[in-house]
Length: 154
Image (spheres, rainbow, N blue to C red):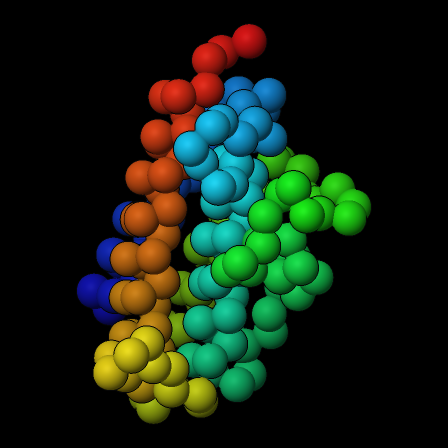
């Protein structure tokens, strides 16, 4: 259960950070940054959903349309319609935290439905995929914190 506790700890930190950021900062993209706070928060959600889907074939991916906005390689400047609001993304991150515990309790050591590799690094259990999602979230939380510091309060 250490994997799920670690994920919950990281997600709680992300949620606390996002709750403190004023909504007017979420859509700003300062020079030197390739994305916004909204994009990074949505990206955390989308990547985690994707990895959870690879972990367990019965996992139902939420907000699948968000991949058009928040998948790797997307950018807010290319959005053809408004993405989800900051509150919607924040609510989805909260909900995802609960769903992971409910859906994966007691299943983290089973074989993944679809093993996933990055280079020679193979992730073949829900535990390894959730650990990667936790690491990924931490990197984007750092970017969110940097964006928050760089963007002046209006």
